[in-house]
Length: 437
Image 1 (cartoon, helix red, strand yellow):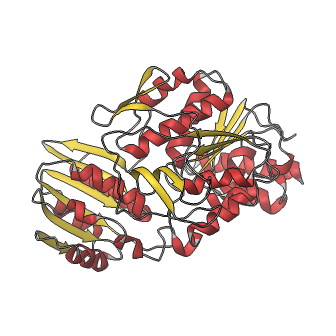
Image 2 (image 1 turned 90 degrees about the horizontal axis):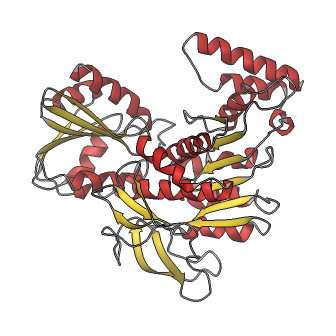
Image 3 (image 1 turned 120 degrees about the horizontal axis):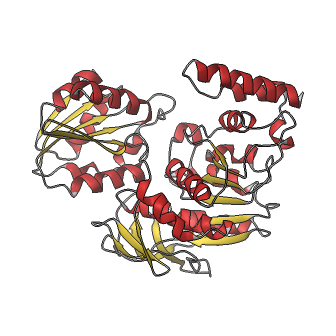
């Protein structure tokens, strides 16, 4: 059945590629034929998993590029098909009928709730965990459920555990993995570091004893340097800790070498630190990451800029309070007159529960430089109400048609578009069409 599963997956992937399509259907077929098909695959090198709430795709793609720079032939789910069926499609489409994966290394982005399927099935050598934030509450539930799911596969895990040492909810995974080698990454204090934070935070209590956590400083949300008020749980010694961080010049220093940041914002810095920690795990020269960061492609909708004839529009994906707050900070730093269009959907992939918009600091947009905020998507009126309650004194325009909203916004010379998951591609396509790109 294993050979049949591989054959059917490879054939269906080939047919879809000829049709100019992709997707996880081949993996679904493979699992249906042989439910344990992943367990029998053979790998000839490291198997690196990347998981966490924010930054999985960017980090996994950069780790893949790093391994290729080091001379490895890499198989990866670069487009972010990170569920069990998508990962099965990727691996079975790149292996022989005997089950040998045709690569020297595998780098796989994995959805947090799907780690329970992937870790036990593959000979994993390293797991990178970026962060944990509340996200898609109706699908994933509270963050505790996600952490419990990952902790459940760690007691017997013997590879490297590469953890964000500035996130207490990530650091707690170390307690569930007694046989793993731990590698911690984080970031030094910088111009954006604060001693107090009013942002939504999930790192308030010690996972070891339940007492309140105290912070020496915050980078953003609950990411920072912490210690328990009652026990020894604290930020561990960081193995990878970029310093001399210049968020305006988009550079940082690590181990005496200056690197470019792959994108704007502190969240991008943490992605870069995770990549450097993965290099340490794999025994790869970290300086190879300089090229990787310099040429890193921003995934669609991650601070993506469109320009033509004196007009520009910057598009960003938002899906939870923490990621959205980082986008708000980027927009807040721009003093130019601007129009903002927010596309809020509540489809299954977005999450039906939109209460997260009240944990997002949209007030950062509400200064004199913002001339108009246009709200659209399936929950346009809810978004407009949130902006109204935030005290915005400029023009608030609800518009049920996303196409009409983008058209109206692009009458202004300088526009920011913010869209949730299912709204991102339609919004992007409309921007491209409207600007004639």
